Amino acid sequence: MYFVKLFLMALMFIPCLAEASTANKYSGLTVNHATEKELRANSPRIFRKLGIEKIMRDMHLKNIPDGEQAWCDGPDMGSERAGCYIVFYFTSANHIYPNMWNDNDLCGVLARWRSKLDSPNNYTPDSGGASWLTAGNEAMVSEIVGDAWRSCQEYAQQNK
Image (tube, rainbow, N blue to C red; front, side, top):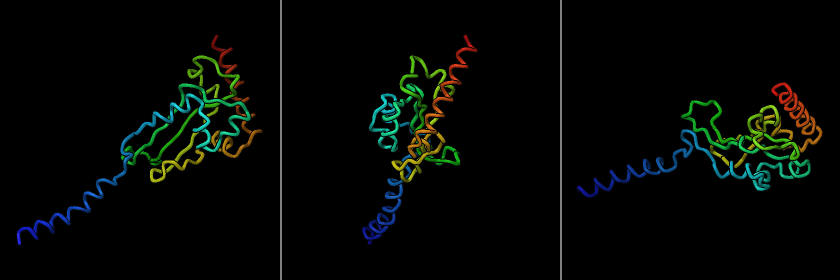
């Protein structure tokens, strides 16, 4: 009788083990270093994953190195928008210069994608820059890249 009771108690404990093993793996902040490395290298693979490989190639656009970020915020971070994010700043390849990251918000265009925690590989645009890239809107991308570059140049002139 003792072993039957012990066996039944063990059966009751099994669902708790299963629940613990399938708990949200994104608690806190989880940085995706592999994706950041791909962005830094301007890898066509990451741009393909985001659906922007063609426009990045055709318009000769590049990520501004050292400003890229990829992470997941778990619900315990207190964020209303828990999810996974890929963020980078882009500009024309011929506008990139060494140590440009220091001026990134003026010299590049923000591109941010977000996915829900339950589908971390299903990214959707979460900024104007990302939306225009994803839509393949070359006219708007050209305009915003040009505006950002002009702002960058004005800033450089004022801060000589």
